[in-house]
Image 1 (cartoon, each protein chain N blue to C red):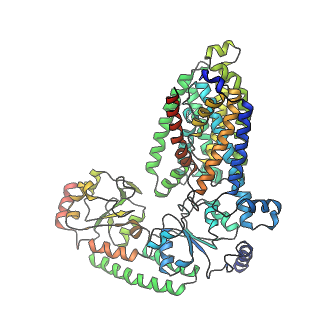
Image 2: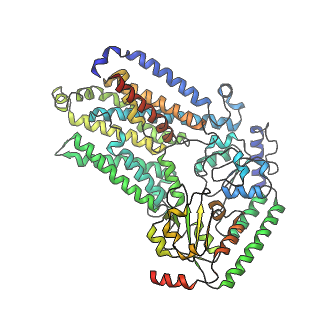
Length: 293
Length: 346
């Protein structure tokens, strides 16, 4: 059944792209990636030369900026994607509008929507899935194994630590204020992966951070995810700067795509964040949080 | 405005120019876009539809064609509604947003985006892919109705009160929309941002089947109001003395604007500026008489939106700019220049 479907799709696609891509199958096909993490994985698997377009969430690695951008993955333009003559659109369940994706399939573009990844395991699954899609199973298995080593190492450290430190994650995007990364977010999932508890788990989603709430959160460590380098300036946030966690260096300011997209750089993110956690909750912060209560 | 009658171009010339521009805009819109499908390809496609690539076929017949028709109708309906309401309120600042149409549509649309999975799940299950446009349409008509009720005293309606009621209701709808925005998660937030910037990029024949009849109805019935609105320009009591049923004129104006604009907004999202600027501009050219002003505004609005949409899909190809954004980007500075030139002239 599936084979017939593929054959049919290939037959349909053949006359449409006879000039550009005689092989509508997986090998050597032209790919549009509409997701930052998917793009990173495609680069990591060494198939970047097949990429003919990406969405605006794809910002890493540098070379991605030379590719045509088809706009935001929640507002994919049918004509724009089609003009790149792709054989395959790889995106996630977040992609919209439904109609664009359906139409692309109707004209013979293979559309793959991967599940949203929000844990180290799902990152590995996503890498393996993409490896299969682009015929790079071996490279994918190698990358996954490398990451698995780091993940296992982190798990051991989490178990050894025993207690779960309280971490505050702030998202700095667009240069206007910062947002708390509350529950049900990639931020929350990231903190879970390093065995930390979310200092603002009572907030759902990303919500604007108030200065008072920053003080009362009094975390053991602070992570600031920037959507562009230099977007966060600590001078604007004296409340944050006076927190013991910030003063004692239990802090990290870095790229939000590395921290929150659950792509191949997740291992890097976990190692960095594990490095800023205090060994055990410090006496100073325990005292202060008791004051806060 | 009354002094420059001599400079005014004859109506027939205006209509010929506008019709010519409409044809040019339509041709430009059908032959430009991210996908390589230029004039010669389009000619071949029309001569031999069967021989075309399926992708090209779809781009032309299922993407660019409905987009052109929807763009033209939407621009026309927004401009005509603006004309009607500016006539009714005797105020050149009036636009369809003023009677609550866009505020109500935005509130309903954002409700569906944010609450579609929870409180409003029954609605989304019942209406399927039409959940958002239907809600936006109902929302726009309902808010207008509320503004109307607030402004009516024992069967008659005070135009000034209707205007104030519209402003107040817009404020309330805006606040509720803001509240929903606050509770929206990351993905909902981005969906609603894009909706509020408007788009013709996802136009389909189904959209036209659903929204088209309402827009056509508003466009075809609007000229009926030309004479009464001319009389309104002299004042409400004068219009009454001239034999027009004042209450009927008010009701018809509001109903046509709300239905037409509501249907347009429902399938395209928020597109500002057309309703405000086009009638204003056309009044400078053809004068304040509604018999010419209404159809001329309709044509000009359609041309403007089709042209802006064609640009919106070319300038950042293969991505697309939201059309609402494009309108304000082009329209804002243009309007400012116009205002400055008028001041110098005076």
